Image 1 (tube, rainbow, N blue to C red):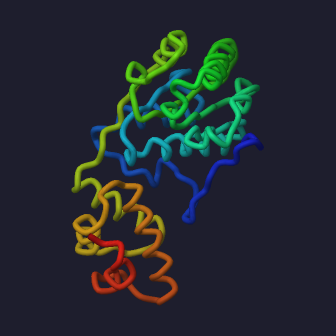
Image 2 (image 1 turned 90 degrees about the horizontal axis):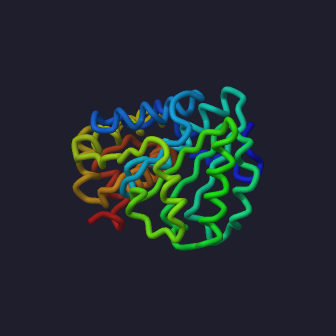
Length: 235
């Protein structure tokens, strides 16, 4: 079951899944490794890193959803919220089948968080739990206080997720729109890429905003309609 402490966030068009993640050829190996985690297979410890917008959070949540659907207990911990959480939230998570901890870089240099994460690693090694971690930086690039934690972070596989190029972002937008039941014409996707922030977080947020506006107005997505809805946000 899903831990009651941190319920998995589910977006407006459903939970992140491997089916609605745009898979670039450069990321096939790390995505396959995360999928194995979702099935309870593969490495016990897996570390993903890369800049914002490459889909780290999406993949962690997709693995958690896959494990939860098999009836396993899972936990997802977003450390971008570390200032509102206590390190004790990691206590007992070694009993879960899959523990996904996001934004590890946010707690680098905070001794209590580092000690709690190190303790979780040590306990997980003795049990059946799998640890799936994500960070903006590779383990050696983190400003950690505890050398032992740096060592633990490299115990399993370490993968870098590569950013999408413009062609791939175009295809990713089309995939997201299709999963939402929307038709996104090529010229509209190209328009969004030319006139908005190009990271996938921003593009996905714009697509969600367009979906709401399209449903409310009963309008198809055209460039004039997009200009009307997003005019003040476009560059």
